[in-house]
Length: 244
Image (tube, rainbow, N blue to C red; front, side, top):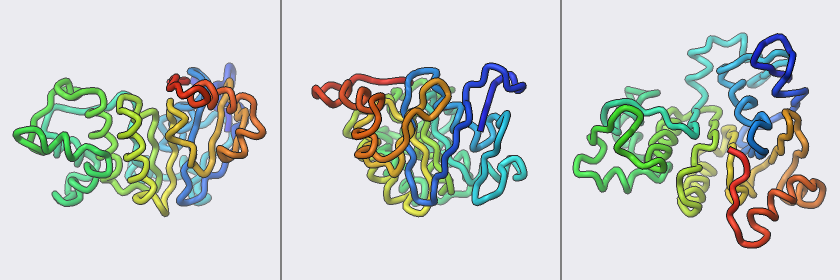
């Protein structure tokens, strides 16, 4: 695919990006700010449409699918969590208002949100303000992830959606996703490379193009840009954030 925000192909932010994600795979996407990470995954639920090429799910061009039907099968959690005034339960059930209590709690547990929700006096009936003003950044992100998981999506997109949680919590969330998304497809944009080392595919984007692609072991051996990211964060025990 090629994509430009002006729609005419000039000044493209994605240039001839080509990849296949199989069912059950986790695809991690790394790269500096402005490399095209979010632009790429936003093409899947048709937040934008490609300028050239096509995005297909099971061989069907997403532009040939009703948008509402497409998005019912795609769970999305973004870095900036969009929450609304109402109870925590209603925020989690936003994509599936008919979901039962057990399903809501299971999704919250997978997102590592159940414990802090249970700590509130009103639990899941706790009222939160517009944009979740009375929750911390990490709490808002975990509620948003629970909402995405409750949809039981065919495709899950996490766009830097764990940037405000600690590393230990992020790893627990990833462990839960490994189980829940076993036969589904996940795309994960992450700042911390430590949480995507076990991804089936890792893409390194640079200036709108795939600069490197493969597993962690493959890329350590073959990609200087990936090795630089890895060593800057983990080579000396540090936790430097790369991209956002």
